[in-house]
Length: 149
Image (cartoon, rainbow, N blue to C red; front, side, top):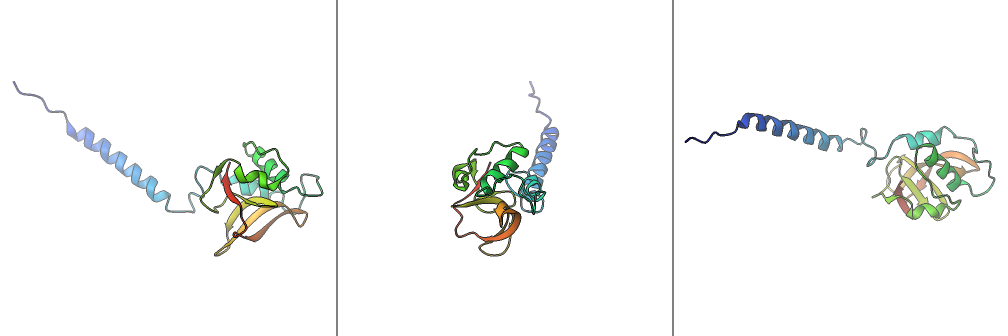
């Protein structure tokens, strides 16, 4: 009796398609213009930038964390519920470093990274910068944490 061998051409096609999809995914992660951060929408900084030049919170003092909580809520995340910037230092999950959309936390300030501004510098949109929502350049050396929600 002869044993029938399975048709390997179908398995080869499936393997080839799977290989191509895997390679396409790998190469897409090497193009930062397509992927800003790990599973982190690019909309967060854009939503924050809509309020540029205003104080949407109505608070007069220490409202950067209140603004960050407001933006997170508007984009479908739960915030820290605190008015303290450092409450974001353990919020969500750690990010390996600055990237667009990541939350940057200093001891007395918090905001959303928009872009890199050179070695050791980042562009951040945040509340309570000169008493309004602004985008500005900050040094990274004083950052306590970079976080994803």
